[in-house]
Image 1 (cartoon, rainbow, N blue to C red):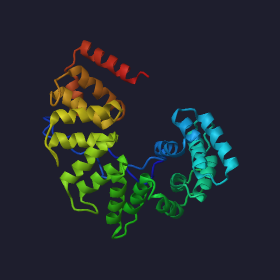
Image 2: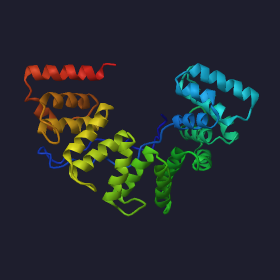
Image 3: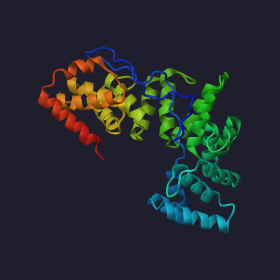
Length: 326
């Protein structure tokens, strides 16, 4: 995944308002949406075989990366303007799937795909140009590519919205909201999360806790880890949605199982306090240890950990090892 350097990571830990757990503070230190994923290849892989039985993308889906490369190479020899094949080759080089990772070769293939009019290739090349990886950094050219691909690639619409949020122009926030809405309605989880953040903060759109909760919930259902954490906080506090501590705990668990550090911290507190879940010191300690290992310091949990007996601590450490084992 290529990340935008000027965007802060979502889900930075803030203090919880009180040891008594009256409510959780939002996990965002500054509410800026996360960077878009590098290339949503599963969308291409699902689209092409459904239309023409594409062997190259089918092989990609099955994890047969060398076969996918061979199929794609054969296609471009037959048709030098096969944009979808060039996009697939670029993705394989970018990720190092079946070949040695090579962003220069990835960019070259994305360039050929973009020239052939393939929207996925245009989006992928834009993301490389934004970072200056494999090609010279060129935000202006990247923006043009995103504008060309946004109608077909939801992630491009979202990425374009992110660029607008940083340009400082008077109307940019409102235009970013429109782009986020477009991508969100087409199922892009990052855009759904980003739109929820904008509604929550009233940026480019009137502040609306209920709309924020609606889109945060949709992003959470789409398995966006940051959204699962934030929606859990909303459920716990009853912010824009009915208060439900059990549902909040379930959301935190979903994100915690994906190694979301903030969710692990929140879930640990719930287990120690017996809120939304049955009180369980071993489970609380397990999630506390995991979140702490990722750098989240929490004096409240440190004090709670002192309640553990040597046996309970040992059980918690064993649970941590099982979680970390492949």
